[in-house]
View 1 (cartoon, chains in turn yellow, purple):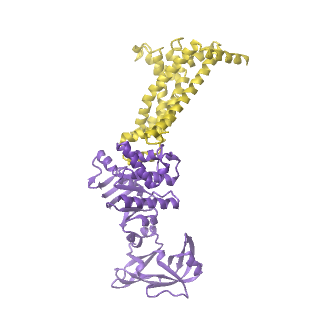
View 2 (cartoon, rainbow over the protein chains, first blue to last red; view 1 turned 180 degrees about the horizontal axis):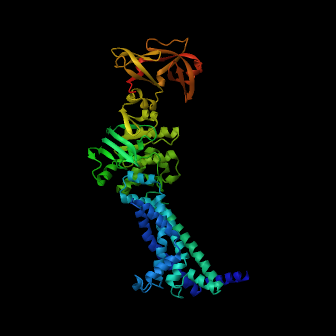
Amino acid sequence: MSEIVSGFLQAINLIVSLNPEVMQIAALSLFVSLAATIIAAVISIPLGGLIHFHEFRGKRILIILIQTLYSVPTVVVGLVLYLFLSRDGPIGIFGLLFTPEGMILGQTLLIIPIMTGLVIAALGGVDRNISDTLISLGATGFQTIVQIVREARLAILSAVVLGFGRAISEVGVAMMIGGNIRGATRVLTTAIALQTGIGDFPLSIALGIILLGIALIVVIILNLITSGLSFESQVALGGPRT
Amino acid sequence: MIRIADLSRRAGGKTILESIDLEIHRGEIFTIIGPSGSGKTTLLRLIDLLDMPTTGTIIFDGTDTAASNTVRLSIRRRMAMVFQKPAVLNTTVAGNVAFGLKFRGREKSEIDARVHEALDIVGLLHLADRKAITLSGGEMQRVAIARALVTRPEVLLLDEPTANLDPVNTELIENLIKHIHQRFHTTIVLSTHDMVQGQRLADRIGVIMDGRIVQVGSLHDIFYRPQGKDIARFVGIDTILKGVVESNEEGHARVSVGNAVFEVLTPCRPGTQVSLFIRPEEVTIAPKDGELPKTSVRNQLTGTITKMVPFGPFVRTTIDFGSSLTALVTRRSADELSLAVGMTVIAGVKATAIHVIPDSG
């Protein structure tokens, strides 16, 4: 018990004193996962829209496949990508193995299915009457899609938040593609795994607290963006300006 | 204005509409009445070009709506539709009303002015800045009407606009529809399963049953001269009697129904099997010892009251005279005459109040 308490106190000290190693690990984690989230969102939102707004043979099967990939183990993604990125692999020439860029690629691939699936669900959650109403009001196909995406904006942002959550909390891809190289590819999760293994609990606890703190801050920021978006759209549509 | 020819719609292996031929005239209120599930909504959706027909054509103001997607969009922008369940978007009331104009790329100043006018017409100006999703059902329906109205459509399609509303809101929406029609001379196509609403609002009525338009005509045609038993039942004619024409002198015929004989006006020849349709409000009731003015009421039948069912301010009273006849009497009359089940009464029906059609079997 005393070990936990003392570890916790030392962790607070590491954070408050802005320990360079802790800060570097946290910054890299944030950079890799945010980059992966942004890239995945840029791909997943239009892809989800494309799947939702078009009827085609095998659509249902494709959606089931995407949903299945929600729970793909991170180590499986890590393994497959490792084989592709390794020197003899199909894209080995790019030298992405054991680099932050390789980790971004891995996390992007990891979260695209969950983000796409949730975007499809978000768009599907918009009442069909809304789409009929928009078409009836004279909207073009594009105007209808834009408006429906707007209606689903909260659920789409939730999809992005969940994608970020999965990216920043995963260990498999970061460990296998990044290699947990100190000062180069070590991120919060891989560092916690390593430090716990060697018995350095204060650092592990400090990194764990930072991980939770980042999650909290990101959720708060996204909530602020959400309320800002809805205010913006109100003004754009002739609503309150106060 | 709108000409529909041989229109049908099949979906999921089911025929929803079949062989619809219909013409809607510019500036009229055309009401489509029919029971739930008869295809009213499907027909309105096809007219609004939301769905594609399986067969047939819709000509809008001389243009075939199937020409191209561009043509469909430009024609759709000359119409507006209000749905049974109004869907409001997650923005303000004013924002919701502005959509149609935004889609048409109108200037902001014009949008503001027109939204103001439309909200004023539906009486919701004071709620302009309110989130639309917080409104009541009646208010949402008024927002939907304002949203449709703001684009000044030539044709306004209303799909059961009062189906989910209380009587106060129903009256409000009906008055609004009449006001819009008078002020803008908009062609209005309205669907309803409420035949009384059809009566209140329509210039002409089309009756739809099982996906087919079975009769189109004036209020009088539909409610007093229905062309079939199903239509008659739907428009509130409880009494449908089968009989045979006994004699006919220049249109004044005698029809035997069981042991009773009715005097009716019909060109049907003697020996023809016919159906007699009698509206309940056309039947008068007097106690057996009372008197009916014999000069105007040609048919007087002695019978026994078998059932009395309250029906708003009326009592739906069934009289057995060998066959059954239903009368609608006011509660006050029922009380004054001390009508009761088992009482023997004389039911009177004018010859002119009986609609006769040859029986198709």
